[in-house]
Image (cartoon, rainbow, N blue to C red; front, side):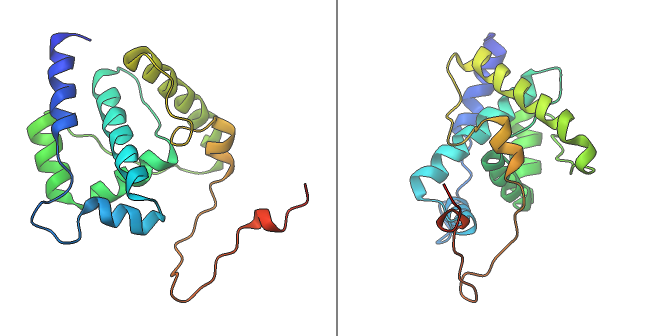
Length: 164
């Protein structure tokens, strides 16, 4: 990494998403909304920061894992934190998140995702963690998500009923 990239990486790593004055902070909300453990959420936030860094230092588009995307989606809702504190003050640039336009983009996003993981390896010098950066097949195969109110619904994993 160049000196400028190292400085930027330090600023991103040091950027705090949790408000110390809040009883229910960003990480707590991330855990609740995704049914994640606190430790997993902390790891996913670090991977999100790595993704944002890669976006800043790369001259091509990148695609996040679903877990990183969940952190990104939530961070976008914290508009001041995202747009002012991170983008304007730290990154000195805007990073927009655009939705996909349909099934015809699957191959394109699969390629971008693979390029993202390759860029991750080049920059960080190790493999992205498989539980946060799964294979492309897993990343784009299991994408039928819905928001479920756990107080009103039971959720039973399909694996219980699938034949082996």
